[in-house]
Length: 84
Image (cartoon, rainbow, N blue to C red; front, side, top):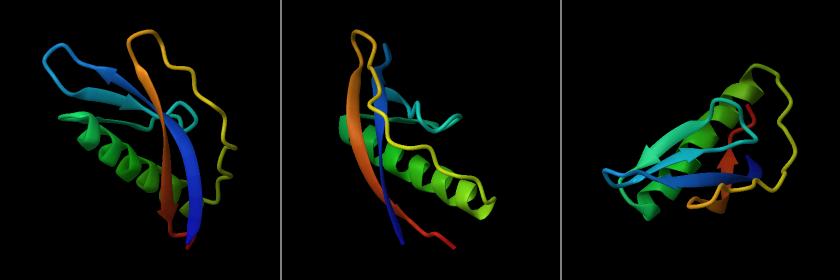
């Protein structure tokens, strides 16, 4: 099992909850009802993205610190994913 860490950017939504983007993993988006749920969902989306990339034989991008726009929050998320 591989161990990975990437930054997620949490954006508060007007109607409540957060949208989540993982800038290092193109197309890796999710959302959560509250902060804790958003981080949990980020980890789940990241594990799925990483597992699919590895299954396709794609190289994973290196860790890079993500910049969070004003009003958003950056959080580093650690995940473990099967390497096949």
